[in-house]
Image (tube, rainbow, N blue to C red):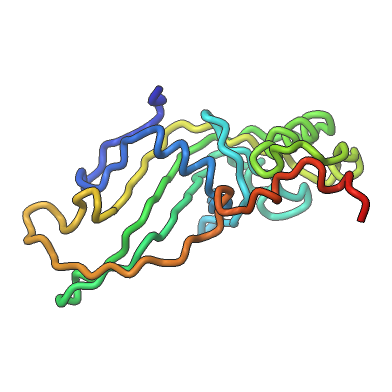
Length: 206
């Protein structure tokens, strides 16, 4: 079911990505987002591993750094995730471009320093990276170094440009004769080998 927070209104209507099952799969597969919070005079942006839950992004940080201080002062967060797919070239200079997928989410952060909440948050986030559930419990001493952050989504917009979907040139312009050069596949959960999720790896004798 498409969530109410998905916003498909944008200037380039031909680039709007509204296929929610595909967007959801993209968010579950990608590894790194960029999280931006308010600072003066510039926004403060950090790369983060993340887990998408359907209504929020789970991230975390040290309790003692700039990011934790700023997000406690102002809980507004923008999350950006993108994947370049291919380089596109045509004879005209303005027709050098990219195929890509891109998602931007505007969120409100809920933070916690409570040890039990941090451990529960980390276990929920780990489900993406360790679905085999083969790890020992998170120690309170480690959790006490972490701020747990649940970025609840208020609005989310998604764009894509993929030639196979007919997205060539802006509306009203001639279709450019693009040559397409695909990038190597980037880091993603689905790119890992099966043995990465073997629940018995640590139980075997070495």
